[in-house]
Image (cartoon, rainbow, N blue to C red; front, side, top):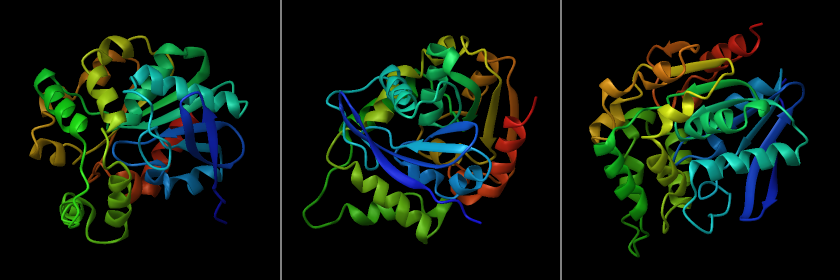
Length: 272
């Protein structure tokens, strides 16, 4: 039986955050990539909710959460994750973070080690200084609405080779459009953080799974935003971590391969 996932809002000192919640038992918090929303976990959440209390939040500046009043840092986003846990009365949780969400999840584990049980870093791609500059420029400018609607088709075509022409692309485009007209705040946070991330991640001492997709780098390499030689950084920063790569997986594998992702996640969470 499919588990019902509810939506609610958290009031913070910097506007509101949308979150989704369902299930019961040991908690797991899900943090999405940029420029997606908690919709990234639409397929995964009911699977997890059959066994766990599962929570997913829209990072401020994306999805249905409000835009932050300033450029947030990864530490700011980590603080909002803790605020949500506090609101829900959760003292300790496992965290699954996808790319942007993985950087934030890692910072939560580094800054608030007493609050994190286990950590799953999904497709947490590494960047060098050259790529950092490109990301800062790209996300500082954001995307602009054009009066003739000509901004719509490029968004539809931008990932069609990876997610197809169907419902998932539609959902991704909806998330894109909600961030138009402003900087892409979570992306800026990661760009400002990524070069210091290895030092921060060395502070992580909880059990950690590094989950990657075989084809995750393809769309990023296409735009010169990632290099294969920079992708061993998480294993080097967290030497006690475990690693799993999903064959044929992409950046969107949480939507495309939810059963496979679920099995890897549950197997890791249930390890003694």
